[in-house]
Length: 355
Ligand code: PMP
Image 1 (cartoon, rainbow, N blue to C red):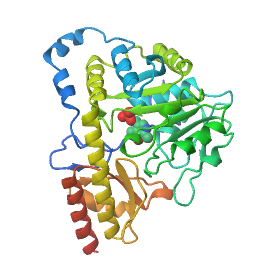
Image 2: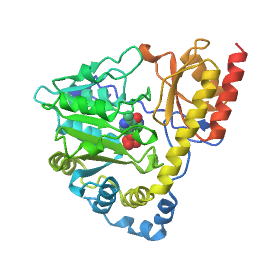
Image 3: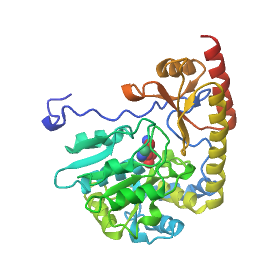
């Protein structure tokens, strides 16, 4: 740490992303919830030579074409949409913009580990609300939470989703607080809260193209909420990084959101693969939390989370292990192609048999 680093930030523990190996080659990469299928065909066609030529020009700082395409897809108005460089950026803008007077952010104890990092960095007090013994988010625990609430739905790394009615109850019992619903994984089976944005001025929904639209490398997130909330987020964006989306990502995002058939086909395929995989893992006596996302959280009484993670690595399969004592028995496995999941199940059989 240099002697110039801010004193206020000296204790900051940055977020550790999942491993991104330099050469993917023979690896089966099931550790960061990417989509195993390519982006929609239109995305690939859109990134033509003309687009590359135009890189000398700044992008549209408002990303209006992309915002219109997203608004049309969800049947909402463009002034109810904002885009970010990944949903991580929008989360950062939202934490910064919507801190309450007490600087409190409330989120589930087991959830996306970027939230506590943002709190640390912005000097916000993160209040962690426990899950129940089945690892579920309990809506009533959030009644009058006393700060801005952030809920991942479906939750990560558990994969368990709240229903729209449950989200509604959190909104009803927190009229005085903003509720951010992080829907990074919603398209694999859960109910989106976006249909509620006209009804609740305290709701901000954040989604991403990284998972269901196969564009993790394009870094495109979007937030949806009432026009005033969106205008506030834009106040932060234009004070921080006005050209937050690059030209190629704007183009890619438009094509990805327009191809509804492709989106529905690959999300359904992943959900089907998940159901088969869950059955296979249960047959191998694993506990599998009920997932509505593109990953599953599993544990076995026969092998620790860490040992299982390390053993799979020897088969060139990467999954995600978390050392947090509350979830250290589990590993999180992204749903890949049926062949990738079969390779993982076969490796798991061998690992268990060798013990
Ligand atoms: N929210 C959750 C719950 C996530 O797991 C992730 C992915 N790490 C994100 C947001 C951020 O996704 P991105 O920045 O790629 O949109």
